[in-house]
Length: 452
Image (tube, rainbow, N blue to C red; front, side, top):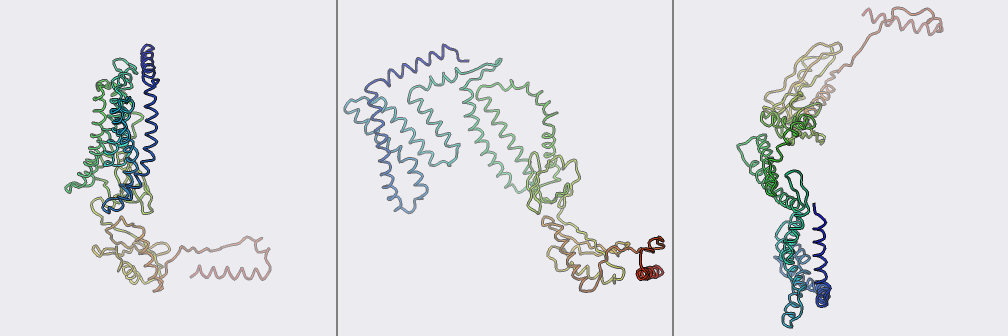
């Protein structure tokens, strides 16, 4: 760690620099002049900007949005650089002090150059941070304190065994990792685009290759960062046992889903675009991830189902080998119906439907004679299960209902006949003679129904 001696040394250096540079009459005058030049540059940049905007608007090929952004970024620093440069020439001619003016001129020039280069780069936070970092290094070089700053940051450190970590090492690692992580993202995107454009690969193989490439690229970025800042990678060998224990307990489900995802990609049982059904979830596979499978239902809901469920549970893949799917719909009619006419009407209900295929053609089967109805089953085929199965089944059943209504075909409902063999004696005493006659008539009618 930084000891008291080092702190005192750096403190004394800062105090000496302040006394030798700031508290000098000529330097204070320079600071005042620099402040006046900054104020003048602010007002002049406003006037200059209006004039340049009116001039640029007359040139049609120039983009108004781009030029406006350039004016906002460069008008003030460019004007200040020009004024400082003009005053610096005056100091050379009349032999005036120019220490701070020279430093400020170099700093502003470096900032203008960096801003000008950043115009041609995307407007993202990464590029802004990179611009500030480059300017900070340039400023340290201009102020001639770069080596002292590096030495100071390196002195702020602590040791753990043979490993020494300093603030300089941490900052260096963050900078290198940020650059490599950004580069790894760009390379990963290029590899993904290249793989996706390859015609000879199936969708599942493309997903697998993209995941492997992304894992290798980002792992290489992390390892190269650790190696570039001087960390011996063998020092992390002891983590192998800890990682193994973590996988056995805390990471068991994560690793299980990861391995299950690889198995799914290798055996091609599930791939993007498939129509699947698992645990009452019916929809099409949108995405295969390292941990889950994204399934979008017809209602627009997106379910994220763990990969492990597709290995351990029963899964219906409606489009595994092909998208040809048979849809079954039960239909019941009364015993008084003309069964041949019923068969004809059911088959007619499937005709002229856009989604129903003619080959294989629809089939109507007589299933069984039930307690209350004669049961039929209509079977037809579709080749677009992604568009839904229940909706086409509902459409066919509505069509069958309409045809049955037109031809007086009855769809029965469960019925039961109750026969009263005897009544309690006190039950009859509670009613009048008329009521008793009515009850007796009702019982006689029930008995007649029983005899029939």
